[in-house]
Length: 347
Image 1 (spheres, rainbow, N blue to C red):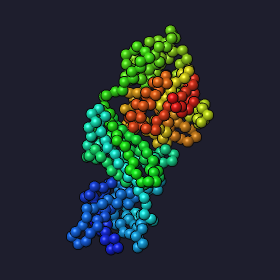
Image 2: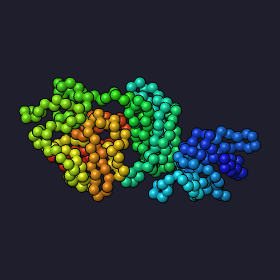
Image 3: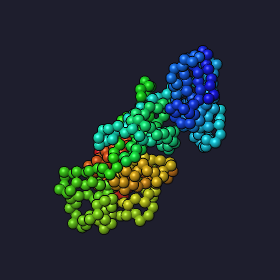
Image 4: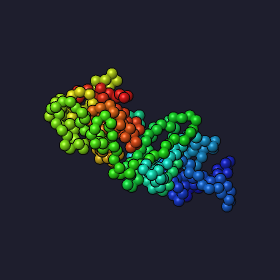
């Protein structure tokens, strides 16, 4: 529908929902004449969106043009109820996103999955750009340059995988990476040769092993339980409290209900978001590593999401590696001293 022929190019532009699209009606182009036409090409971003896009027409100088769309515009238009006229002022460069999805256990391609593409804003909040089902292990998309994105892939029977990237390469190379999805129920082992205990399959919030303090009671329920409250030095919060970062680069005041303990321990910070949701399924696979905790930065109204608690550097490093394998590639280790957040550390 809505065909437009550009005589100078010999190119027909039209809208269709019968071709592979970003969503709804997309604008396509085909070079040719009369009954002889090349296969249609999707114009990609920014011409097309997850909504309906049509009525494309070029400026007389050949650069940019106009189109009609019911797309959402962040901060300006929040629904797809109405059509608007948009102007493309100049020809914009685009970046390519290419990747593959595999099963980690077998290395076999996964050919059916849901891909969600988020744009990450400067304040680390996210907006969904694309939510599309693929029926091939390879995906290929076009993105705008100089922006930060996150790809999240969900397949039945597998833990959700994700990664983030920034389209900042001036040479125009493709972005993306192979994503290995972990089959649900597999678990992650924590084999620590430093002790003779059985392998710890849930290192998250177990107390440290080999503690010489005879007052430390045995942990008869290792799962995700915090150290027993009668462990000398333990100081469970009993409710929400405020604290301030004690490190040289971490001075923000925050509110949390996480337990506090004496001594040095570690947590893994996953993200900091302005739109945190406790029911977000991205975090479900991480509960096998430890308890999910949050810290609200009071001055910024942002929420840090963390996996806790780890009592040795080795446990923290193993947990960080496991978190990154589950798609949180920007996660990092945070140190705490006597219940106070010291800040990010590289172990």
